[in-house]
Amino acid sequence: MKLLQGLRVLDVTTFLAGPLATRTLADLGADVLKVEPPAGDPTRGGWKGGPDPSFYWRALHGGRRSVVIDLGSPAGKEEFLRLAEGADVVLENMRPGVTAGFGVDGPSLRARFPRLITCAITGFDAGDPLAGISATDGPVQAWTGAVELMEGWSGTALPMPVQLGDVAGGACAAQGVLAALVSRSQTGVGVHVQVSLAGALRQWLAVTDRMGTLRSPGTLVLTGSDGVRFLVQTPMRFAAVLLKLLELDPAMPRDHIAEAAARATSGEPASVWLERLWAAGIPAAPVRALDDGVPPPPWVLDGEPLLPAGPPPGLGAHNGEGWR
Image (cartoon, rainbow, N blue to C red; front, side, top):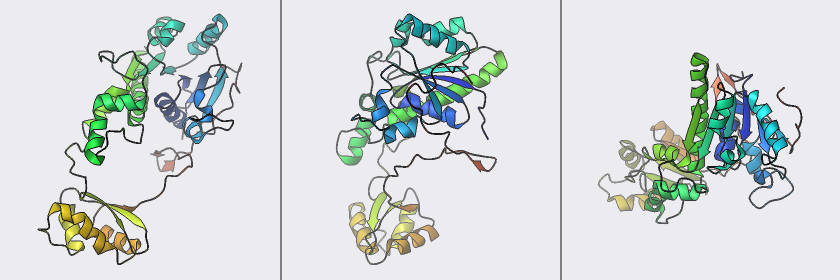
């Protein structure tokens, strides 16, 4: 089932937030046409470069086609405008002012094509003192308070090892585009959607565990006698249930629980403990390694799981084809 079948998306994005948004639309059935500069998207070879497509590239850029366009040339701009005229959505995440310099920013495009939905992803909100600068996820996490949150957990003032600002921004951009499509179906007029990584991440941070209630011993990584690690998380009433299951004194000082729990679980295999934890209703799971496979889309529609939209394209593999 492809909910967005027939939708045409012109993808002028790179790195993480923008490609994540367009990957979402592609997985849902949209025809996504990626616009790349003559040298190609810099993430094709991964962060260190290389001849083969990186896992990063494969995970983000599947399910789309590729055209090479030099937006700085008159012929390139003309070709881009021809594609924009036939598109439903144009999504970009260039540094603020870059697309305006080319004359293909959201307001300019919508002045020519009123039904077009445009979406621009920036690092910071227009009113932020940092608006207009080049942004990566680390500075966004620092500006929004995520680094301080991480320091409270780990004692080290570093960003979370997930590009959380990019992920939040990409998710919010896809949501904004989908909402704009609903609006256009009712009004016949497109919308310019503006999303910042900082604004999206602030929204997510509003519901984080800033009080540290899930720090140890609220969250414990324990090891069974077989050396297999498993994580147990005990918010609210689960803490008392865990202490009872491990036969630990409920009056035990909080800073002694982790060590006592580790001793209690070391005598039997992790699988035995996990069965007991699950039977008691305690949230727990084995600790697994990261998977390098490209994950399937997370949606199940009328009982039918969606499959990945397809592999990423070769550079310029669809030059001259236009919209199919």
